[in-house]
Length: 135
Image (cartoon, rainbow, N blue to C red; front, side):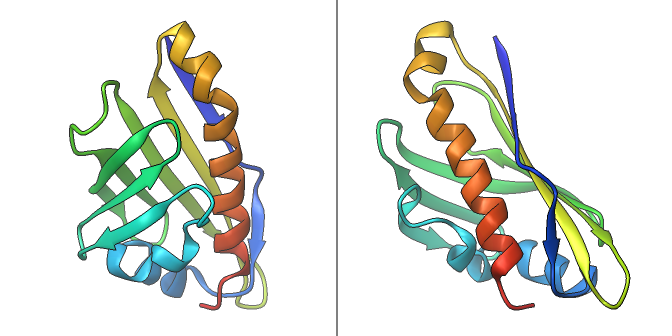
């Protein structure tokens, strides 16, 4: 069953070029990952690995990038289900921007029941943390 988790649109103090530069490189992204959800963060420029409670070790890789607009991440096969995550960003007035985090996963009903609310919390916390980061 395809499940979609979306954050609210968050205002960001910074231009999309700087936000894109930070989020398109996993080695610069660790600080934006909420530590209560993503533990043991290890990253290179194009992939990362971390641990999520009740889910285990997760690996993500950058799958697609549209400069200053969207970055799409996919899992590296470490999960027993398909998962995609993307961050959309848009310029606003006065060198500010907004962003939104979306996660799409194919979960069976039992897995959705076990971790669905945690995935929504993770998406919300990621967007909140990203919106408060310095760019």
